[in-house]
Image: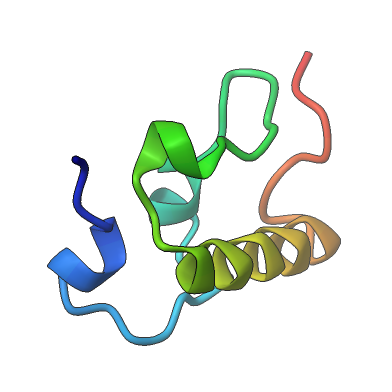
Length: 66
């Protein structure tokens, strides 16, 4: 069983400006990885999805990778 990255590292707020952490949870096509592959809890997966959407809107992350 995988541990949740955010609870393991005691991260309470998933910030959209922290692009290095967000990139860990994206595949090469810039799509969000599933919970099964990452081991993130459901609550943190929802927060992660929201942070990725905000980062994409602010042009910190790409919507689609070539």
